[in-house]
Length: 312
Image (tube, rainbow, N blue to C red; front, side, top):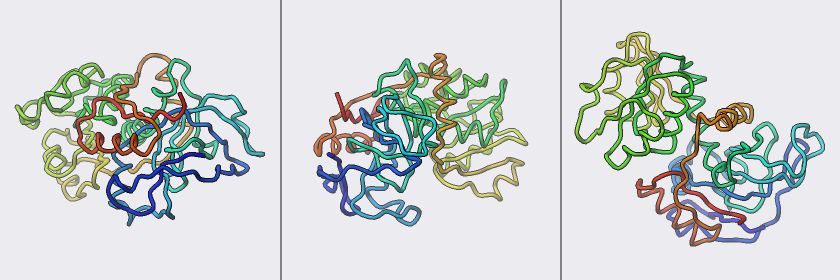
């Protein structure tokens, strides 16, 4: 099969097109013919070696952790899927990734593709959707009537988190730049704060939950707007527990764990129309295409998810 791989950590030049052997599915695996993948910031952070102490890879590495496609083969112990099923997945981190024509993934990490989405739209969902779900539903136990502040709501995770919070009945406030105001409001935020014009700590009333996608001073200052007994959840850096204790706040860091059952729940919200994808630019599964996709992701100026089209 064709894949885009890296042979060592480094710049975008490390991304090279290569013909490699088709993956062999194990008894609990489904072999997926990938139609579309997407690019997330974690892709190029891994490529550059930022997470080498946390994650263990054997080179060459296929990057990418979002996929939508059709089941081509099911392992002998697979019970949920059969050849021909349309699915989407956030596969295991330390197995081969999704910049490829085929993917072998454990059936427990796979879900049926929402019927109302294209493969490209479905490929934009798994990583950002599961991240938001595990932060807001699993960790923060978001409830109807909660007030939540989502930092950087114009990003992939942020815009999904806004929609998920609204689907759960919360009142949502989001920070962002002027360029992200449109997508933040389209995602359903009740209030938008342009961080370049206003200090969020002075612009909003106290909230029950802060979803931190920035870290640093933004994370530290967020305690000023959380109600006693409230929650701060970060996907950037572990909060300092002393700060959380001093403000009577539950604080934690979430590192995504792939989960097909949770992905299926997200799929239901999408099919009901409560959450929709935001697809931006699409690039082909070629050496040049994936390099350009990484360049756009690294620029922080992408509008909507960056898609890799594998099969047209």
